[in-house]
Amino acid sequence: MGKFIGLLTSGGDTPGLNAAIRAIGKACINKYDMQIIGFQDGFRGLMENRSVQLTNQTLSGILTLGGTILGTSREKPYKMMIGGKQMDMTDVIVENYHKNHLDCLVCLGGGGTQKNAYHLARHGLNIITLPKTIDNDVAMTDFTFGFDTALGIAVEAIDRLHSTAHSHHRIIVVEIMGHRAGWLALGAGVSGGADVILVPEIPYDINVVAESIMKRSRSGKSFSIVAIAEGALSQEGYKKINEVKEQINSADNKKGRSQLKKQLRALDAEYTGNTVFLAKELEKLTGLESRLTILGHLQRGGSPSAADRLLATRLGTCCADNINAGNYGNMVAIKGNDTVLVPLEEVVGKIKLIPPGHEWLRSAKEVGTCLGDGSKYS
Ligand code: F6P
Image: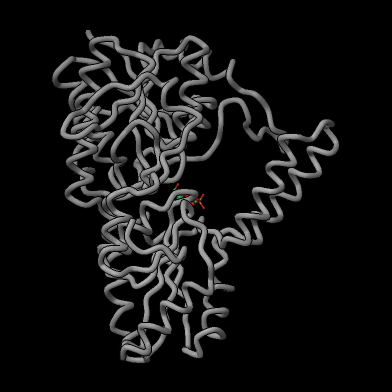
């Protein structure tokens, strides 16, 4: 009999999670004669010892399903809500790992999950992770599964918004997920031919955006599509937020620092992804009617794309090989055409943002897309 494996999915659900569960499970069972159980609802299920046996039968027919058959949550091992109080449940989790005689725990998730998994690895558990998120912002991997599906949904939305924007001579602002990273908005904006793309990595000037729309209007194009990432910030907001961040860094007492942190949260809520304000303001500045569409969780729902099924299956089978080899404490990542292992300590505490001058940004500019900062070709 081979090893005994536990698996969980954590963080926001993502198309491709079931494809990954299937790949890990089938390869572990059929290639290595291992046994595998799935914990329900992320780290919460591991803490409460709620699990299901994963067999060839339960793993069959799930490749094309959206979401995760195991359920998920955003709970952290060291900060769980227990009876209305936040508690560190690491010890209970470690105990349950051993009670289940696990040789390895596989955690499928985004940046937060990598951090939680690393925390457990530092408490002596054998951990391997896979990178999933529609945001594509996990460090040390070229892509995360879920991103391609969400990209396809956002592009289809932009295509559909084009015909209605065109017919009514309107500005349509479309808000795209991605948390603090702009990959999804940039990728969808370029693929869907958005006229303006606003991402968190490039704070925007609303007057520059309005002027680019007016320029289009003067040239006879009386509609515009503005693709904006939910984490995008105006230059004004960016400046104010950074000023408070600097004050936090130089604050010499705890009370002052906690007040500044409160101020930072308020500014963040006021300025980050304020798409309602943006749509209204663009209407005022351009004289063109404007509408706002927030794509929201639609981007995370439904069946995974072929590319995500392929990526999740490749990462999943590579994961099984590395469980067998005992290569713990790593994330299975994609680099170029290869699946590779990256030590968890190189992944955690980082976020993969769009680097300045990235090829996608250059291409956007070179086809005439406004990025909100007034720059043309870099
Ligand atoms: O990380 C994936 C993501 O969909 C982000 O793009 C978004 O900011 C967040 O999750 C939404 O989280 P929730 O589903 O918990 O509201």
